[in-house]
View 1 (cartoon, rainbow, N blue to C red):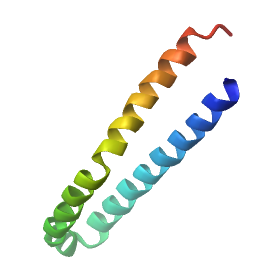
View 2 (view 1 turned 120 degrees about the vertical axis):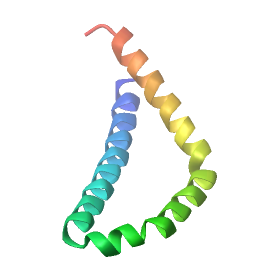
View 3 (view 1 turned 135 degrees about the vertical axis):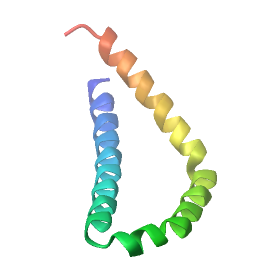
View 4 (view 1 turned 90 degrees about the vertical axis):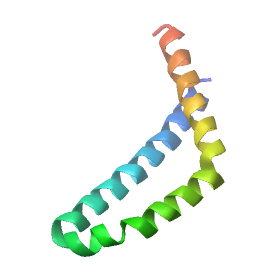
Length: 78
Protein backbone atom coordinates (compact mmCIF):
# COMPACT_ATOMS: atom_id res chain seq x y z
CA UNK A 1 0.00 0.00 0.00
CA UNK A 2 2.83 2.40 0.79
CA UNK A 3 4.36 1.74 -2.63
CA UNK A 4 1.05 2.60 -4.33
CA UNK A 5 0.78 5.85 -2.40
CA UNK A 6 4.40 6.66 -3.25
CA UNK A 7 3.84 6.16 -6.96
CA UNK A 8 0.66 8.25 -6.85
CA UNK A 9 2.47 11.05 -5.04
CA UNK A 10 5.28 10.88 -7.61
CA UNK A 11 2.77 11.28 -10.46
CA UNK A 12 1.11 14.17 -8.63
CA UNK A 13 4.51 15.77 -8.17
CA UNK A 14 5.16 15.51 -11.92
CA UNK A 15 1.81 17.14 -12.71
CA UNK A 16 2.43 20.00 -10.29
CA UNK A 17 5.96 20.56 -11.62
CA UNK A 18 4.56 20.83 -15.17
CA UNK A 19 1.95 23.36 -14.04
CA UNK A 20 4.61 25.38 -12.20
CA UNK A 21 6.93 25.37 -15.22
CA UNK A 22 4.12 26.59 -17.47
CA UNK A 23 3.33 29.39 -15.02
CA UNK A 24 7.00 30.40 -14.80
CA UNK A 25 7.33 30.39 -18.59
CA UNK A 26 4.24 32.58 -18.93
CA UNK A 27 5.53 35.05 -16.33
CA UNK A 28 8.88 35.22 -18.13
CA UNK A 29 7.10 35.93 -21.40
CA UNK A 30 5.14 38.72 -19.70
CA UNK A 31 8.32 40.23 -18.30
CA UNK A 32 10.38 40.15 -21.49
CA UNK A 33 7.75 40.68 -24.18
CA UNK A 34 4.64 42.17 -22.60
CA UNK A 35 2.77 43.47 -25.67
CA UNK A 36 3.04 40.33 -27.78
CA UNK A 37 2.21 38.10 -24.82
CA UNK A 38 -0.92 40.04 -23.95
CA UNK A 39 -2.09 40.04 -27.58
CA UNK A 40 -1.69 36.25 -27.73
CA UNK A 41 -3.84 35.65 -24.64
CA UNK A 42 -7.07 35.32 -26.64
CA UNK A 43 -5.86 32.38 -28.77
CA UNK A 44 -4.30 30.86 -25.66
CA UNK A 45 -7.60 31.17 -23.79
CA UNK A 46 -9.35 29.43 -26.68
CA UNK A 47 -6.87 26.56 -26.54
CA UNK A 48 -7.24 26.26 -22.75
CA UNK A 49 -11.02 26.22 -23.10
CA UNK A 50 -10.78 23.42 -25.66
CA UNK A 51 -8.46 21.41 -23.45
CA UNK A 52 -10.79 21.89 -20.50
CA UNK A 53 -13.51 20.07 -22.44
CA UNK A 54 -11.08 17.32 -23.45
CA UNK A 55 -9.32 16.81 -20.11
CA UNK A 56 -11.85 18.13 -17.60
CA UNK A 57 -12.96 14.67 -16.51
CA UNK A 58 -9.35 13.54 -16.06
CA UNK A 59 -8.62 16.61 -13.95
CA UNK A 60 -11.67 15.90 -11.77
CA UNK A 61 -10.57 12.29 -11.28
CA UNK A 62 -7.04 13.48 -10.43
CA UNK A 63 -8.41 15.92 -7.86
CA UNK A 64 -10.59 13.24 -6.24
CA UNK A 65 -7.62 10.86 -6.14
CA UNK A 66 -5.48 13.47 -4.41
CA UNK A 67 -8.15 13.95 -1.77
CA UNK A 68 -8.34 10.20 -1.20
CA UNK A 69 -4.55 9.94 -0.90
CA UNK A 70 -4.49 12.74 1.67
CA UNK A 71 -7.20 11.03 3.71
CA UNK A 72 -5.34 7.69 3.51
CA UNK A 73 -2.02 9.25 4.50
CA UNK A 74 -3.57 11.03 7.48
CA UNK A 75 -5.29 7.88 8.82
CA UNK A 76 -2.28 5.55 8.45
CA UNK A 77 -0.35 5.49 11.73
CA UNK A 78 3.40 6.20 11.51
